[in-house]
Structures are given as C-alpha cells and as structure tokens.
Image 1 (tube, rainbow, N blue to C red):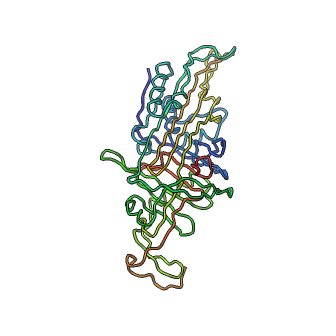
Image 2: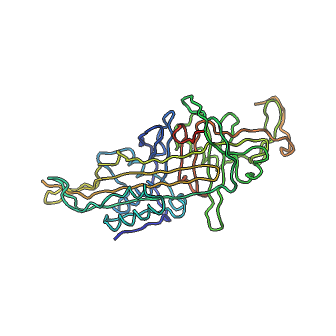
Length: 394
C-alpha cells in the first residue's frame, strides 16, 4: 500500500541556519535559505524538501529526525516554521510510505506527467529486504517524494530586450531580458508595485501573476540590495517590505528639486531584468549515509534507519511570459539490522501635483528573486542570481 498526500495541512517547526549546498559551475540548489552566498555563484531554494522531510517525521511519529552523525542541514529541516498549505501552489504533492514496486511505479508516472522524464528517472528500482553485506540485513524500506510543478503567467507580456549584466566578479556579459519603459508601462500599471526603494541602489518590486477565477493570487518579488549575504536575509527583507510598503504617493527631494514618487511605474520609469533558465540535480551528501532511530533489542540485535538517497531536481525558467518552476525532492531510508537630508524647507502638501521622479528599476547586477502565494510566510521558490550559468546570453 502507498499513500498520496496533497499539501493542504498546516505543518510547523522552528528555523535554524546551516551550510548545505554544493556548487558546480556557478549555480547550486540548497536545503537551507540561510546558506551564505558565494561570489559569482547563483543559488536556488524551494521548501519542497521541507514537505518531504515533514512527511518522513510523520511516518516515524517523531518531532525530529536526529541523524548520527549530526549534520546542520537536519537541524534546518527539523526546525523550520511554515504553513505548507499557504506556501505551496495547488497541485503540489508528496508521496510517502512503505516502499514497493507499486509505489515506485506510481511515483514515476506522477513525476513523468508533472515534470518529465528526467524527474521520473530519479526513482530507481525497488530494493527488497535481504542481506546488504555479511553483517547487515535490510528489513524494510520507505520512500518519500515531493513534487512542485507550477507555471504562473504575467497578465501582460513584457517587451523582450537585451542588456549587459554586471556580475560580482566584474564581468559584463550581454544577456537576453525583458521589461518596459515609457508608454509600455501603461499595460503593466496594475501589475508592478514598488514595495521598497532607498534611491541609493536598493529597491524591491512586486510583480503580480495572472490568476483565473478559481486560482489563488500569487506574485513575484525581485529586488537588489547591497551586501546581501543569504536568501534568508533577502526573504526577511521582503517580508518587512510587504508589511510596510511604500505609500501610494509621496513627495521626495532629488537634486535640489521636488518630485512625485508613485508606488507604481510611470512613463518616466524603466524596468528591465534578465531572462533566467537552469536545471539542477543535486545529491545531498549531508544526509546520505546518516542513520537515525537506533535501538538495541534484548537479543543484542541492533536496528536503525539509514538514508540511502537524498536528491533534489530544480528546473526554473523566467521570461517575458512568466515563470516555470519545478522542484522535486526524494528521500529513501532503509530499516537495517545487525547482530552482537534638509535645505528645501517643508515638503509640498500635495504630491500628486508634482512631476514624477524618473527612476530606473534595472536588474543588471546580482539580485534576489522569489515566487509567493498570497498570504504565505515563505516563497515556494527563491533564487540569488550572480552567475552566467542561469542567464541567457545574446
């Protein structure tokens, strides 16, 4: 028998930090949003691994999976605080339970339909109970797999264009991107909101995705902020901005003059960001081979669970039409046994009568990006972009 869990329930825990990702060719996936950025490298995170880990805890009926030897990533997964039902898009699923050929066939078919052949290939053959070596016997196996497959679309297509992107290592490759300016912004007036802007290089935009009558509202947050060190820091900045966004209109001083600052784009503004595309497959050695729930039976036999596989696949694409976000995470544990500024005076009273301040919201340098369901405390996909590996060159 196998069980299919659609992510609707509330799952909660406590958050901690750890180093988890292994970088390859300038881009990596991580299980920890607190992972420290590496210069010139991009980093992707999705809480689908958290959904899988939470189901593993429920399977064993424990509040935490205490690995031996301990590893920081397990602390992150054991203590993360979230509401899965609000965070993950509709249709996100978690398969989990006793391992079998039937379960694996069902998981492969689900992954093939939702994500494709590469995801289905993550599910290898079933390993039945039996000897592992001269000393150890496999008594039982289990399998847990989460799958997010979502493609939110922008309400109106942005205009494709090219521009240089300034990487932190000083290189400036010319890349494909999209955006709007001048009269083009009118079609996106209700789509883009400026949540934060210190007018010194730190700003955050909210771009609303299209949803039908039955769809849950969702959006993308994209921002740039000097000296950002992790996705957790970027997400905390985003949460604060959502709770205290910029006012609709205000009067601001700039170059010894007064300007109107509106929280949506005006024809005086420029918006541009690069297109993104990546496919990541990562085995997490921080989990593989670790044991848990050890016990010694009265006859001297030692039993324990051991993680045989811990793998993640992330596929992400962003262009002028919208985003494609796929995230699959797999954990396969075995049950084993072994024997024996001033100067301008008061501000004008009516900011709406001032000329709009020209602004450039151009993501031509490292930036943080995340996809959110409305009302969620965490995004369902987040990324730090600082490498050519995720950019589409021109």
